[in-house]
Amino acid sequence: MKKIIKYLWIVLFLGYSTSCDQNFDELNTNTVAATNIDAMFQINQAIISSSPSSFGILVYEVGAVQQVISPNSGVLTGANFNQDNRSSTQSNWQQYYRNVIKNTKDALNRIQDNPLRNNLVQMARILQANAFMVLTDSYGSIPYRQAGAGFSDQIFFPEYDSQEFIYTEIIKELEEATAALSTTGRVETADVLYGGDVEKWRKFGYSLLLRAGMRISKANPTLAQQTVAKAFTGGVITSNLDNAFVRHDANYLNPAGNTLNATEASNFYLTEPFVNFLKNSNDPRLRSIAVRYVGATSGPEQTVARESYDPALQIGMPMGNDNSTVVQVAADLGLASFYDFSQVDRRRMMKQTSPSFMVTASQSLLLLAEARQVGWISTGTVQEYFQQGIRAHMLQMAQIDSKMEIPIAEIDAYIAANQISDATAIRQINEQYWISSFMNGPEAFANFRRSGFPVLAPNPFPGREVLFINRLTYPNSEISVNSENVQAAIQAQGPDDLETKVWWNK
Image 1 (cartoon, rainbow, N blue to C red):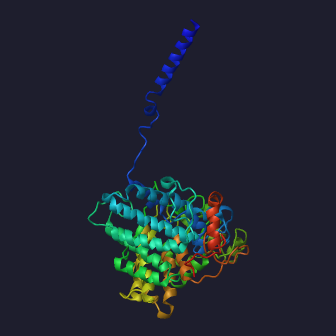
Image 2 (tube, one colour; image 1 turned 90 degrees about the horizontal axis):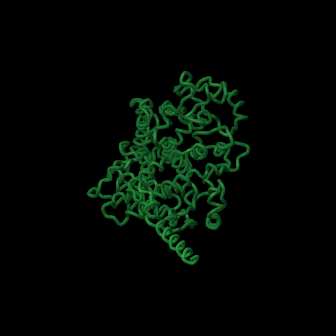
Image 3 (cartoon, rainbow, N blue to C red; image 1 turned 90 degrees about the vertical axis):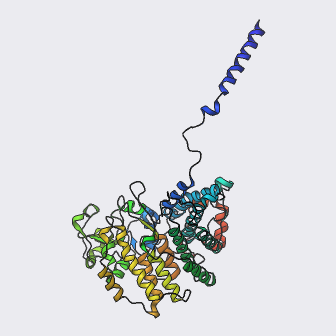
């Protein structure tokens, strides 16, 4: 009897166990989770994340080119003191690898063989090339061939590629992708950059190609000239209507604008070199860019009632001070406090919803002026490109905020008073590029290193680690997790510090 009861319990247990397994997969499957999304949404995320306006640019790039600076230390330590702060040098790394490369790589893996999505494939390649250009310009050697392959190929410790190799690949990608865009293919209307306008994407691609060619002008002049010629023939952005910029709104705030309108509102100031450069040439852009809260003795006193846009009243903060020494500097200049120095106007130019410009007509026209000056293109004149580049940037002010609009008469007067000279053309062109790239930190920093202009005095801060910052240092997280490959890159490139130059910086 006991055996019968025992066997009965076994049968009942097995039956219960089997019934528990029934519909197990269905019960444990999330029926509302997305299993496959349109690749366009990933590309849009990559576009938004391509905004060259992060918190990190405030700490490093715009300070390295002496446009905006802070006298404060802690998390703001960086180009203000020419010191290494890896919590901020990692900004570009995290932004572009996590949000741009990851999304473009995954989207390409899923749609690259789908002829119906040809235009989206090429858009993804162009965005990805731009991201890699920002990354390699910032750090030098970086993961390229194996980047973003963690999910697709389970490569979790990517090898690093040299910048020289990366640039040949970027140029190849931009040439092929831009040429492959088709006006007869599917229109990707959900695209948040150009609404699927293939001609504008083509100009964007060739403008990046022009930028890439000029970037390597000293490192590989032959390839540079060939690349610039192809970009020029293809057709670059020469109108503000075609500018490539990220539109920010309440859902996707301008990162730097958000910072400057929140915790760091009273911590960043226009520099003396930048303000004086604009003042000395009677540049009408100073009225559009700058604000000074006259007589402010604290952050809360930086009110609308105190604001002045008058160029004559703008005073830039001298380089090389901390929040102790800057107090005396302000007093010596007759200011109420260091809160009385000029700032980039966070209520006009750097709102939370201000656009972030990636590539503009002004930048492309100025690069064409330089290309014409060195004989790499034969159409147009240096003077024409130079003047058009200045005009385009001045007109661009109104694209940011209508209150920043510069009257045509003032634009004409500035151009007439600032004629280009053959003997100083390269310097003049790149000084204007410096202004034109204001608040596009990665591009301003890269072109300053490439061209050597404007001529800036070294940061005189007594505790500086380097005279000039030549690159950003690798993130600590990358060093600890991918140590072997990082060390191999350092061995080939040079010390992982702010002084080591990237390949094209000759």
